[in-house]
Length: 270
Length: 237
Image 1 (cartoon, one colour):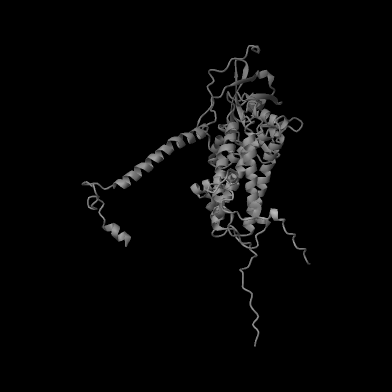
Image 2: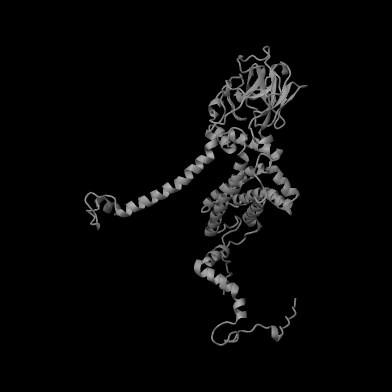
């Protein structure tokens, strides 16, 4: 199909190379307007000269990927964004939440949902985002499994991923108690008792989780501390290791991709 | 090659012609500095890590004192009908510390376990011994029913159907000065032999009693010499 030629830019809008001294006062110094325009570049250069971060960023973001990668390869990033959503909404929920079993936890949740500005939205993002993260992490794991991406040399990435899966489920378990309504209370009773059925160490594990033989005064604050300090720190550290290994080892090609072969040339007999 | 060289080296620094070496010295100064710096770092890290860990797992090893509580008078309870009592399992945490107990008088025709001073009144917990959901006594069926996974117990609290692994827990009770006192909870196996309080889901029959050992944190029988006095509102009967 013939295309119309692009109309030429008017002369005033055409980019022109700068002439020396055009923007300055002739002694090599830049005019204030020019300095302001270059401020962003100057700041980035200042940081990069001292940290060499740009090399690492380029290594991380502009790496080569195999042919044939597709939308299934975005599930890991999707899981990480679900985690970032949990982290951000969780931090701000913590500004209103009070982990007190003696009347306080449930009331502060009620306040967040009913009264606080956008509270229902932020709490909803955290609550439903938790389910989304668990679903995504399993889909991501399924993609890695069925594409065979866990094989040599990426076993370590897989192992760290499995630990991240367990930590995510631990986050779900500890977070479930925090609204402190009847469902949260009884689900935690049942969950802790399931933990307790492990032979030999189970009874002591239950006592550790509850901080005593019964659901007591410090059980809620214990779950809260594990949920918002211990597990997030571990998850962030392991996500860092996971991403480093992904960058270092590269992404595996989809299993249906055959090694690239040069097309055979037709040799004509002369 | 390297191993061979190492073998020929003397362990004495004097023999290695090190500057400042003295007779009999075997640890080089570099090695000494390495070990002491890393050792000090380890001690410093342990100084905050170990107490913090002990702080976190301390409740596993500590035992809270258990108070006897008054749940009524002996005549309040019948032999063949359960009465429901709200009791305090954990004090000072409001509703989360409350639980319920089903209480009746010992019925010699039914209760064949040996009698002693702690079971003239029989108090059965409402906590299912499967995973801890609240069971309720259904009079028309003469059964304890659990809403979660369908555990069913008979009049004595012994499991007759469903997933629970042992009978319902019971409480020590004591009749003293005309009142019924309720003490700590204990667990029983299917022969109603007493064990210290176990969590739900932990079998006590056969190998179960060895797989699920007693915990450090559960109350043993508290002393019965200093029972709390009845509140002034309740006249002695």
